[in-house]
Length: 443
Ligand code: GCU
Image (cartoon, rainbow, N blue to C red):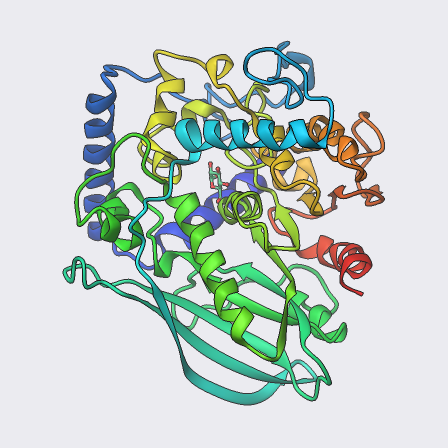
């Protein structure tokens, strides 16, 4: 029964996130086009066959491994050893090693930003004083209009809504939330009792912004010739090292930060980012690539986010490389699902955390019997553990232990924090812990 619940929660999440706004017919044609683009990328890479990933359905005969006892041994790339085998001894060495790691992520996993990304012009389309719960707020509805004079066939806009507390005496910290594009009239379920995350932020006197990633880059392979990726490619398909959707979503967070730098209500030096699941992946990618982001709250990001990919528990590289998810990455990444394997990948998730160093990263996950094991809670914890030596070399604090902590333990003493809450696929129950953590940096 519990397993069935997990599956339902998981499928509902997926349905809401990706497809709710499309009819069955539109969905079928999107899937068909995604498969076509995926095949074209395989052809470009000279790949004839890919391995299939395990199923996220725990009842399926090919269900993903969920047992710690079945986790194989693996060797992780050492973030403190250069590609030529020499060791990183100090902060100066680290700068060169960091550049190496970034290059590997660009080339092999998340893709490169093109040189010709056009300007974004922000417009405030509405400003209204209202209440959020009991808190008087001003809500600014914004639109980032992207200059498409290079290819007028594709129009792109960034949807962003900023909510600031009224009567603040000085610029306040803000959290950017990667928001789901719920169908009109649909109110997402609230997780648990008590104040919402928005009310909790307002209670601190902080602001929050809701950024809709799918407003500027669709969450499917078919959308790769549209949105900001399609615009920079003038409607053509991607080359293998071109940016994937996660980098595009992260780019949008950077542009949003550009706007926040111009908004006198917000202190742009104290802006953090939060996201769940695929948006948790986007949040850690945004942290890694945008040094102005001060803190990250990375929710159940799983494979492609902060989960060690080499662990054969939960979602695997083969799933990420399939036509349903490959758009999140550079085309090049799919080769690790055939002929190469995850062991050939020159990076793993701990290295995504180290390139955030030494800014604070709070890794959040739910309970396995509620959320399921697809996201691999321990895999995310271990990425934090293996990132810790870099934070420590640079004078910051990593995780205090390499023993997987019990549910609810709050490992928040260093710049890498980890907490597994009692709930499901949500950041909900961890918001209060994250806010407490962020206060030590924001106040
Ligand atoms: C699927 C996918 C995950 C992703 C999740 C979500 O489960 O396999 O990688 O994180 O959807 O975004 O909800």
